[in-house]
Length: 143
Image 1 (cartoon, rainbow, N blue to C red):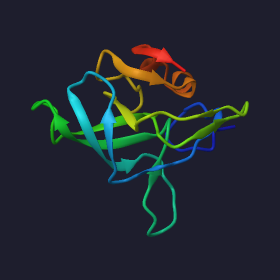
Image 2 (cartoon, one colour; image 1 turned 120 degrees about the vertical axis):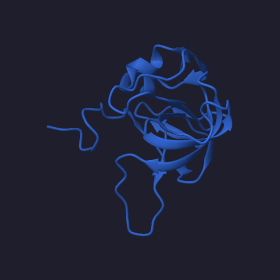
Image 3 (cartoon, helix red, strand yellow; image 1 turned 180 degrees about the vertical axis):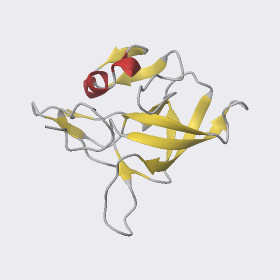
């Protein structure tokens, strides 16, 4: 049996994740890859209704364009993983969790999810460490 999601053998999420980040939203980049602010341009594996904007939340893979940062990464497109969101989401044990910003981490390849930076600023949720173990290796704190 599959996970019911397109995009390979990703583990299912252990939470009821709301999708508060639209395509076109500006989010911060939480790693030290040189990017500071990024714009969401696409959500990988999104299947929606005609005319509806794709949305994403914690644990989703997105494509971004860097808007502010170093000259070597600015105006370039990268795949990324959303690691934080302001909107409250609920874990299966009933705990509700939210963060103070919307943030993502740039990844090198879309299937291996190797982070582009070597450190992640701020905490990441446990759902990310289960689904993307390579991303959690460079994180300082897992909540």
